[in-house]
Image 1 (tube, rainbow, N blue to C red):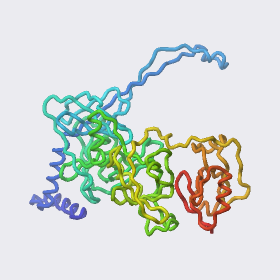
Image 2 (image 1 turned 180 degrees about the vertical axis):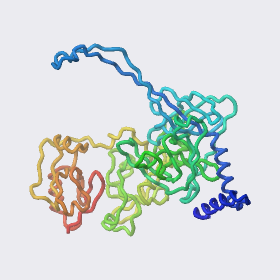
Image 3 (image 1 turned 90 degrees about the vertical axis):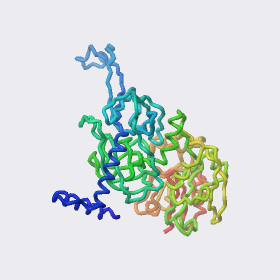
Image 4 (image 1 turned 90 degrees about the horizontal axis):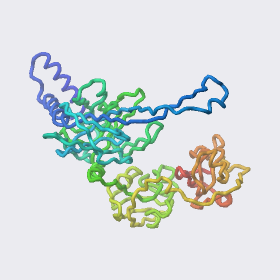
Length: 475
C-alpha cells in the first residue's frame, strides 16, 4: 500500500470518527499498529542524563589596577572551582539483565550516568563498554523487579518506503516527563554517509535515513519498524535550524549487533582492515582503465606492511568482489569488511591491466592511530620549483616550509603550489596543496621523478594524489 493511500485512509478515519461512523478496517488496523508499537517498545525506552565535573584553578591578580605587565606577572592562586556539565540522551533496554544501548557521544566523559524509565523508576548506571568508531555504548542498571526490553530486528530487510517509528526523550529537561515521545515517518534512504565537520568529530557510514522527526535528546533511542522491532539507533540529524527538518539518521541494528555483543562482554571492538586508500570509479577513470562500467573501487594507495601489501595488491588495482560478494563502490566494500572478523581470510576479485585475478588477504585490525598510514622517509631540505607550468599547474618539492604553509603530513611526492584558472588541471579537480605521488603509474617521490614522468607523458594523464586518482586531459 502506498504512503499516499495510507494518509488518505488516516484522513478519512478522522472525518468518519468526527461524524460518529465506523472507520475503514485498513485505517483502524494501521492506527492500532502504531498504538501497539508505542506501548510495547516505548516502555523499554529510557531517558539518560549524564554529569561531568570539570575543575579549574582560580587566580587572583593583586596588581590588576596597574597597566605595567611587570606587576601583572604576579598572581595568587585562589580556591579550586568545580563546574558540572550536564547531558541528555536516550537509550533502550535490550534484555532483562538491564543492559541498555545508547550512543557513545551521549555518555562520553560522564562521571555519573542516571537512567530514568518511563514508569519514573530511576537508576544509576555503570558503563559496560563504549566504541568511538561506531558511536555505540552499552550501560547497565541493576533491576529491581521485572524490566521491559525491546526486540532487535533485521535491518538488512529494511526497504525505502517502509514505515519508521522513532522513539526517544527529546527535550526531556523541558517537558519533565519520563514517558518517551513517538514520531512516525518512512525510511527515506539507505546506506547514507555523513562526513566529519567542525561540529561533528567523527564520520558515519551506511546509515538509515528517515523523515520521522528526530530532535536533540533522541540520540541513542530506537528506530522501530511497524512490527515493533528495532531496526536502527538514532544518531544524527541534518539541520539548518537546529531542530528536526525531516532528515534524520540511524545506525542499522545489524551493524551494531556485533559491537554491542563485544561491549557487553567487556571486549574491545575490532574492525576489519585491508590497509588500502580507496575511491569510487567515475566515468573518466572507468574510461582510462578500460572498464565497461563504474562498478568496483580503485586502490589509490597501499599502506606499508598492511594486509593488502602482503597480499600483493598495488595502487591502481580495482577491487570488484570480496568473497564473491560484488563490490559496487567504497560503501559496499566497507560494509563487506564489517562482516569479517579480524584474522579471517578473504578472497578479493581484482582487475589489474584489464585482467581479472584473485588475491587472498588476511583481514587485519583497524589501527587506532591514523599516523600508521604515513610513510616515514627523509624530507628534502631544498625546494626546486617548475618555472614553466605543465597543463596549468606549478609544483614544488616538499620541504618543512611547504609542510607548514599547506598543513600537510606527506613527506614524499611533489606539491601543487599554483593552478591556472580554466586549465585542464583545474578542470580535473586538482588544487593547490594537493600532493602528487604518481603520474601514469610512474612513481613520483620528488621533483626529479616528476620532471621525468612529465617528459614521458602524452595524451590523458592518470595523476595519483593523496585525495585519490584523477584524469588530467591533454586538451
